[in-house]
Amino acid sequence: EMHKFGVLTVSDSCAQGKAEDTSGPNLKRLLCDFQALGVKQEEVITACVPDGIESVQTVLRKWCDELKLSLVLTTGGTGFSPRDLTPEATRPLLDREAPGMVVAMLAKSLSITPMAMLSRPACGVRKTTVIVNLPGSKKGSQECLEIILPALPHALDLLTNRTEQVSTLHTQMAGDPPLTYTCPHGLAKEGHTKSGRRAKEDFHNVAARPRHSPYPMLPVEQVIRIIMEHTPTTLPEGECHTLLDALGHVIAQDVCAAFPLPSFPASVKDGYAVIASDGPGLRSVIAPVVAGQMSSVTVVPGTAARITTGAPLPPGADAVVEVEDTELVEKTEDGCEEKVICILSPIKCGQDIRPIGCDIAEGQLVLSRGDKLGPSELGLLAAVGVTKARVFRSPLVGVMSTGNEVASPGECLEPGKIYDSNRVALMAAIREQGFRGMDMGIALDSNESLIRHLEKGLDEADVIVTTGGVSMGEKDLLKPVLEEEFGAVIHFGRVLMKPGKPATFATLERKGVRKLVFALPGNPVSAVVTFYLLVLPALRKMAGWPNPHPAHISAKLGSAVNLDPRPEYHRAVLSWTEGDTLPIAVSTGNQCSSRLLSLRSSNALLQLPMGTEGVPRLEAGTVVKAMLIGPWV
Figure 1: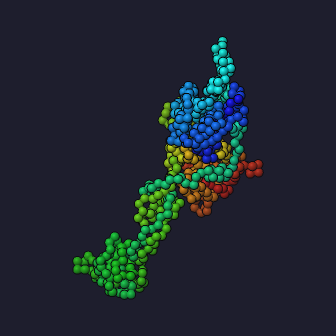
Figure 2: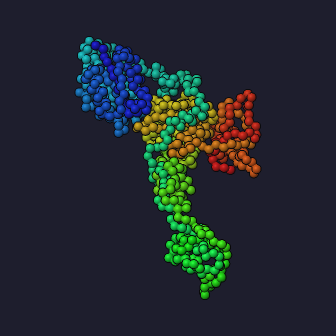
Figure 3: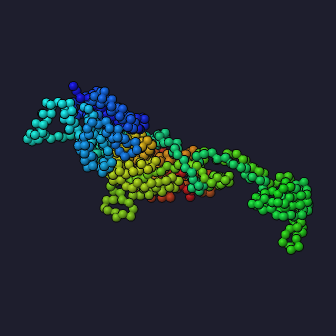
């Protein structure tokens, strides 16, 4: 009887269709490629279930007890996350454990990355079925399976009491020289990912790298549309902030006035509260009425109450006459107070009085969900008595630089290295735009370093922004690491623009939460330009901005500009001169993507069309579209 096999993927996101299962199909292929097992594709059944003890045990019981499979491989759920329960689901079902398999897999994994110590696999036998827990990543599960593959045929023969095969192997192992094993699934065979690119482990094989990018060059308008389609409208949970702390956020609730403003009839001017029907003429001045106090005096015909701006109108009065429309007739004996005045102008009922609720009526909507909170909006909330505002949570943005050549400013600069300006520039841009940044440091050009930095960042941040490692270099490993280690979906990997052609956008699920990853080019100017163009609209959308795209205006070129074969985002300074209806755009000079000086003082990116034989340049005075990225000069 032939052996039958099963591969069970354990993943909430894969089971829900939010992520692609790359590990399960890869394990099935490895089993079929291993000739010593003699297994065919149709002899390997597969399934995918969400994390959880019951869901895993249901499949294991069916495959072991009813279908009587010889080998079951599980992938996923062996880590430290609260939902990683595959070992807890497996161990109670085992009749005998196989700790040697666990030790072999962990020993090999630890030689690759110290993070392997966080793996908790269970291995053993249930009746005549071998059950092996493997990690969830494609790379990790493959490495572990390749370690135990040589022993699996013998283990299955022992379980099914195939004495002839067992004796043959024992004889071979005792021979001279003893039997050895070479894994047939080396890097030479597994040199490409599913999208035709070199695997990340194979970066040393420079000759194997593709000569052309597998990613199509997409226009800017299309990639922005892709980004916005995959960006959540807002983050799920809101936050309560004091008014000043809410500055720059987007309010997450409607706010209505609990009382009218003003809540009493108030004087608009400094002057006198009077009875309009008395008309012009003499008035006896009674006690003053000041702002902040309700008056106890009553205005009667022939009298006037001195009143200040904003003070409540005293009973009996129905108009206010400003000081400028009166003259003093008589002082008090001490000469300090007004005793009699003369009103010089006609009076209208209601003159210079703010009626109750004339500014804001009771129950009136003063701010709507989705309004951005600036100084005026915060003042409005304070005016209606609000002390805290519920706002949409601002996304936390992790920023990571990559490259062996990059050093943090302040470190001793070794030959061949440069200081990292990208993190500082991007963290500053994030903060300037009102968002929170998290410094993820510098990842070296190695799988281990990239994985370690990304894991920490993805556990804390909502959005990851990286620079470097996304072009065609032999150590540009970021894209395959994102795909293979984190199950990311890369939505685009090249953009038809200058600077910023290698810009990449990916999404992935981390502990059931969607994360956005922007892998930007390593050149400093490219990184900053693509941040404003691609990253900033996504951050604003997540923070609840009703219009997340940067503002665009028309501007006139101050001098002629040569056009590039690609559409270009040209750094410029916009300024107004007297008599001009449009601002003048002055280029910041050499636009080389590594020249950070081209961003100095720039407040706009000029959107220049690609050059053609017929139109190789734009002359001075040409009107172009400009995207604002800084304050006016």
